[in-house]
Image 1 (spheres, one colour):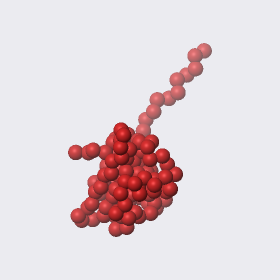
Image 2 (tube, one colour):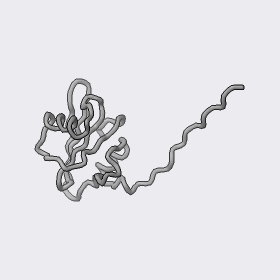
Image 3 (cartoon, helix red, strand yellow):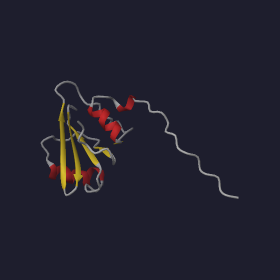
Image 4 (tube, one colour):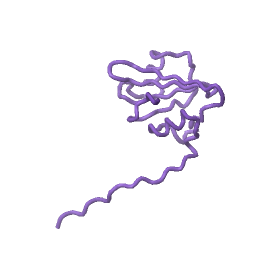
Length: 119
């Protein structure tokens, strides 16, 4: 069962985060680290130093939601090497399932050609 929104952007904080932080501290960190509007509907992912815990802050219809996941074994493969600091919902789902999203090869998406101008 996936309770995370499937639309919107997912931003990853580049540095580890103190997992004792709650909604209010994470709210201010979104403004400071991301320079983003916490109310815009995006998801903001924070991870622990050991990368076995993540928190995701999200604004949802009148209130903030804080998702928290702790792995009992293993670590999340957080792409914080500078190559990827933004995910889509599919990549987030893979990351939370333990998949290294940097290693996933996606096919190029098809898009229709520009229609020809009328003569």
